[in-house]
Length: 189
Image (cartoon, rainbow, N blue to C red; front, side, top):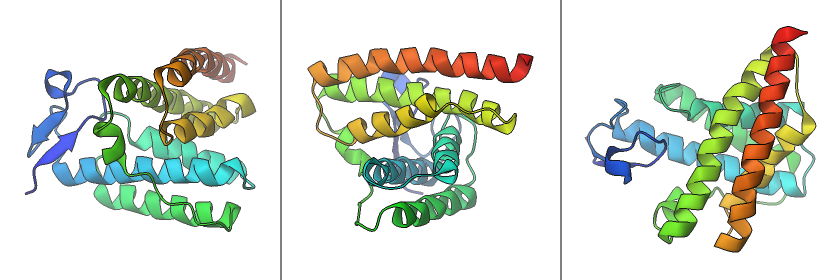
């Protein structure tokens, strides 16, 4: 089995990332790799959506993709690869230009401040996707919440600076609260 590097959640070993054959959560190295590829595909989808024609289906794939990578939600490699293929197909449907997937190694190898801010944003939108997924299942959605997934992932795929990323971290918290309000509404109306 290949050695892994996984920095996909707050449970990472020593807060530096899991290495070895299995992560703290029990995730295997191949699954960590597929989940990184899935996030890279979502960043590609966010790039395509910036000048493309996204739909409710695009939003659902975005939410499902992010939710799939939340800690301990899905370690099924077949499901993860299938979802990545669906995202690739949607990316091509909404925009005829070629948008490459983002290589997550670029994030993991970035300056510690940039990596930390981008990771905080990524972890925030993953959690928010869980709320959005549950609200969506109950028939509720919010365009501002859904649009923010694309904005955040697009910026994660860009070079970024502390000056540009720190406001996005704060916006992640703001939109997360809006998403919680949506889920509350979905459960109480």
